[in-house]
Structure formats: C-alpha cells, structure tokens
Amino acid sequence: MSAAYLLERAWVDGATRDGVLVEIADGRFSAVLPEASPERTGAAVRLPGLTLPGLANAHSHVFHRALRGRTQAVAPGGRGGGSFWTWREQMYAVAAVLDPDSLRCLARAAYREMAAAGITGVGEFHYLHHQPDGTAYDEPNAMGLALLEAGWEAGVRVTLLDACYLSSGFGAPPQGVQRRFSDGDVDTWAARVAALPGPARVGAALHSVRAVPPEQLRRWSGPLVHVHLSEQRAENEECLARLGATPTQVLADAGHLHAGTTVVHATHLTDGDVAALGSAGVTGCLCPTTERDLGDGIGPGRRLHEAGVRLSLGSDSHAVIDPFEEMRAVELHERLATERRGHWPAAELLAAGLRHDSLGVPDAGRIAVGARADLVTLDLASPRTAGTGADEATAVWAAGPADVTHVVADGRVVHTAADRADVGRAVTDAVTGVWRLVEEAAR
Image 1: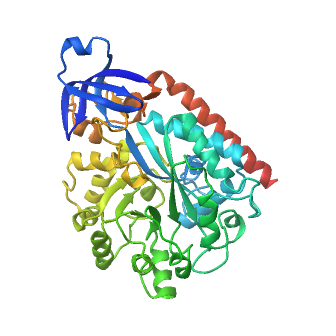
Image 2: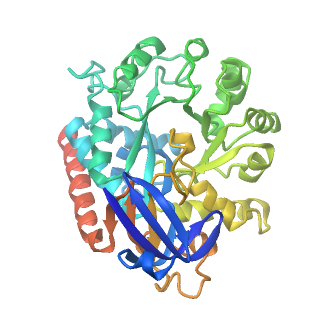
C-alpha cells in the first residue's frame, strides 16, 4: 500500500515547515520532503492545515469510557462527589458486567473516539481478565484479545499492558469483582500473558504496590513494565505503615525501576522518590484530566522532568479523550500549584504527547523516513485555532479533537471529519448497552 500527501504545514524535526511532501510505502514514510518540487507533488493528496505525527495515549482503561457524565455530577442527594474510592465502586459496577463481546463493542467505540482525537497508539492497562466469579474463560485471554481486535477495527495500535493484580490491598485477598482481575500469583499471570499470540503487541503492568505484594513483585522481571504509583495519599500512608517504605522504594527494592518502567500518576512523591525515579531514567505518565476529575492532586511534573524522568501522557479514565487538553493541563496545573506561569515550552509538551516508545513502539511519533506513517491534521481556520500562529503553540494551546480533520495510522486513513457523527452514534450505542447490563444485574 502506497500513498503521497502534500502537507500545508507540518511538524518535522522539531519545527513547523511548509509544503512538506510525504510518501508512504508499506505503512512507513519512504520520503519526507519540505518544499518539494511541483513535479514531485502533482499526484499527492493535499492536506490543508497543520499536520502532526500521530499522538500517543500512554495510559488507558478503556471500559471506564462508560462512566463519563455519570459519576461527575454533584447534586444534593444525587450521584457524584466523594473521592477516588467512592468513584471506584461505580467503576466496579461496570467492571462486573462486561464480557468479551460487550467489552469489544465498547472498546471499539472508544478507540474510534481516540482516533478522532488524533491518537494513533494507545497503551491499554488491562486487568479485567476473567469471568465475574474469577474462573478463566475457555480462552484465558478472551478479554485481552477482544481489546486487541477492537483496536484493529478502530485503526488504533493497541499495546496490551496486561496487568498483574493479586490483592485488594497490601496482602488482603481480592474481593467481589476484583476476583476477575486476579490470576492468583505472578507466575500464573506471566504464563497467561505469555500465551497471547505472537503478533500481538503486549507489555506488562504491575497494577500497584498495594495490589501486588513485594514477594510477588520480586518474582518477575521484564523489559517493559507500567505501574500505578502514588496516585493517592491513602495508598502512600498505608504502604509506609505496612511495608515501612514509600511505593517508589518498594518498586526499587523489587528491581522495577529502570529505563523500561513507566510510572503512572506519580502524584504524591517525596524528594527521595523524585531523585530515585530520575536516576533510573523511568517514564512518568501523567493523566491530568483524570487526576483532576478524581481530585487526586497535582503531581510534580516539572521536578520529575528536571530529575531525568521522561514525560508521557494518558487519558486514563476518559473523563475526556483530548490529547491536546492533556498537554496543556500539565502546564496549567503547575501554574495553579505554584501560582506562576511558564513551566513548560509548547514543544516539550507536544513531545510528551508524541511519545510512543514507552508502548514498545519507538518508531512512531515523528514524521521521518522509516518511521511509522502516522499523520494528524488540524484545521487552522476553526474558531479555536484561527490566528494562533499555526505552529506547535496552536496544537498545545488552542486545538481540540473537533479540529482534527484527517488521521492516518500506519499508512491507513482511520478518521476524517466526515466520520464524526458515526463515531458519536457508535459510542452512544456501546455505552447504552453497558448500562443496560448494569441495570439488569442490579435487579
């Protein structure tokens, strides 16, 4: 499969350039030519606007998409309010009813929403493994395979971050719906993950230090691992009380701080934690829209960056699916926390949004010969983007998913502006179907 596009403006080699011809062969860029000659560009498809490489969503729990608009409202005697822990009970009600078919339907719709927002690769932090009573499906990886199939159907690359989840908290056994999450021990979990088919893009996740006891953490090692870290103060306090160490120290003692580690959230850290994460060269995945939706707090993003932590971004619980908002929220949250402006240049925030390497895809996130052919084109004439400079500041400070007009992933057109209404209908149908299952289960 081959194609050629003439990009009106494009982000290439860390700068915006005009009139960039890209040629694609077998899903990769075979030529990238700024200011190409008219003879070469004659047959190319014109893409007006600002074109970026494909964006990465480094942390997703795709089934949480069913919760949007149903857990945030606050009204006297109504739903909403509370904390992360009360929100979790509502999330568990959804987790209890999904099967491979309903999960695939919901994931396909949510991944299409991601594609419509310019996301071409997603790290799916997956722990909904088994049947509601904890027994395995006939195909032990049926739920994970449903997610991989949904990604292919939606045109988004899914890295399945299959999560080990063994405890309801610091050694306590799984309770209720958590039985679906657990394989019993780390060896059984690792064996199930190893049975996933070879072509699948699979990484590993250790849910958290509260969900995987230290002795189990020490029994596994791998080159690519994602883990929730210090998302909640209560988790930190209990970790100190039970294990005499911070979650970062527990991970370090178990051998899980290295360049292949991605720590998700990293919100409540000591100075020693920041230094240890930076020295290890980990990736820190911030999820600002989820962290503020759940009232988790504002993490020390800039301090982590200066210590040597590489920044990536995720939409996590999908309170919104808007990678542009995730980028600018990193800066805006720091402004609120410090009461001053100017922590992050737009180019650094855009680079965070383009980081696919923590998902095991180092050849994406740039428009360059040999890289995966991912392109996200933004309308420069919308009420949001008009007059904003048509450069990286437009992407970070002005744009939103409604400005995405054309998306290519691995050389394949996966979204155009004409698809928006159909994406909305698909999400409506999928989410409505999930809540019908929740209501039936409650009867």
